[in-house]
Length: 322
Image (cartoon, rainbow, N blue to C red; front, side, top):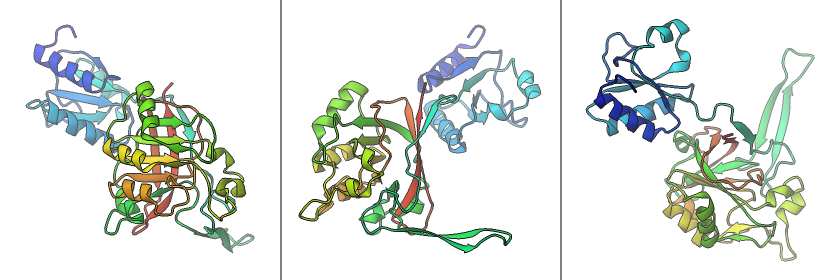
């Protein structure tokens, strides 16, 4: 940071504290290098990341560092000539921390054999076919089939549906809990979550919590996955009401389970109600992933934006930092 005014050094140190994976290129002055009509105290460049992130970074930093004037632009979209022309300006560059990261799909493909609550159907109908110009198809399915998201409206009247909930940021850090063994009577407890936190760090607000019970390894066999007993009730791992209340107290974004439901086979679905009435969404039938982890990883959740829908299939991707 040689030759930089103290006020800029303090500002950049604060940026680096807020975004520890950032790095800076130092120069003699700061200006709005991407905008000829404006002068800025600091121009922050990020890697190619979702546009929403630019706004989030800008809003966060401007609120933290008043009266400094900051802006955020995408470095990757600038030409080489422009980059060279600003090399003597004061720049903080925030790269994509997940560049080169491993991406793992956690959604089941949708077909007639997709994991689903008994009675839920999927049908792919061909309406027009070759040798005509196109093959045209219709999809008929239950909204809650396969790996899917439950919005609060699934159980709470007047609350968010899928379309309104999907407008929120569903890409967030995640923490993955893995049960010690596959057991139809397993129940996630508060003590188990707290034990996980002691090893992998406390659950932060806005986090996804993934409960991997191992039951997802049975998903290719609908009979074993539903596991209906002699009394006609399904038996598979579940989440205790107290654990759901604890997750709500941590203000997580959502809970994902590798089973048909975090409640098991009802009867009152109190876990659903506890989570959904607090605005915590639920993903069911996520693919089993066996590596427990704390922070440093992200979960990308992409539902179909269906107005009025209470459930939607989702494309879930786990992004693992190397």
